[in-house]
Length: 154
Image (tube, rainbow, N blue to C red; front, side, top):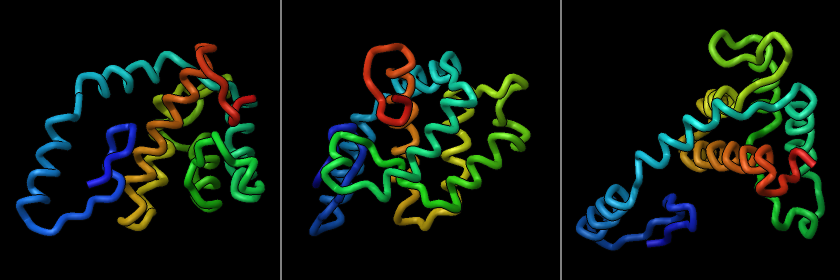
């Protein structure tokens, strides 16, 4: 079994149902729901300006076309152009998660926009993209707190 450093399942290869059961049980036992819920609640306390949101989307589009060497150390957003367009549209029009009247958006709403457009993903990409949206929001939060650099906001 391969588990990523973030605790999310990467590739799981088993040779029996017992091994699959044990891998699922291990994943569930190691999941810290309280910690994840705490992180999700902190997303509401950090906000991107309209300019930062635009830069995030622009850089997400740029990433796909960058030389491989330049991509090192940068987390890929993992959404296609159609999904990024939907995030942009929903930034202005989504009834529940759009930007506020000043044009800023908190990371909770952004996370929900990203996971909302992820619903159009094929099932083989769905979990990876959902985990990616969570990790991106965490990275943005760290950058907004001046605890880390984030290419998407620099």
